[in-house]
Figure: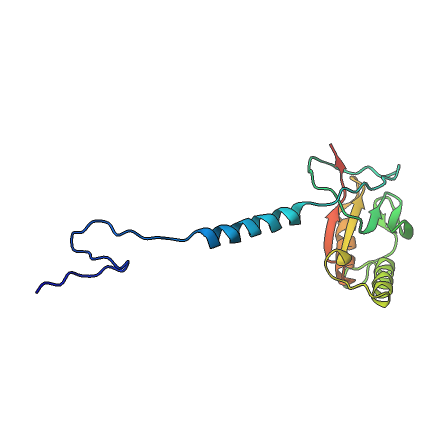
Length: 168
């Protein structure tokens, strides 16, 4: 009595040809279509226009993604503003106020902590879009100033940063 070897796929490997394997793709297609839907929904943003101040010249971009309204920090040639409130002056491209030992701008840090506390008292959590800022910086702003603003915002808990630009 001769016994043929059985293959992993259930057929015999003894000269009978290629085994046929049935694979159900329905579940895989459902998962992939759901994944595609959520990826597309995540990249679709609401169209929002931001008012450009006359003394600020933003860099240009060809990106098609629109911004959502967030806390706005503006860096002009004359100072730093948070939500259209002047926080600290800038003279000759440099901050007038010295930074602390961590590299933060003290007045900006205090303002951002105040905003965070008011949001917490009103019941809004500091996650996702609430922990984000829209940074509008003049294209001639010194990178050291931008770096200090980013560091200060990060220390205050605003970790999601978007840079505002002019669409072409």
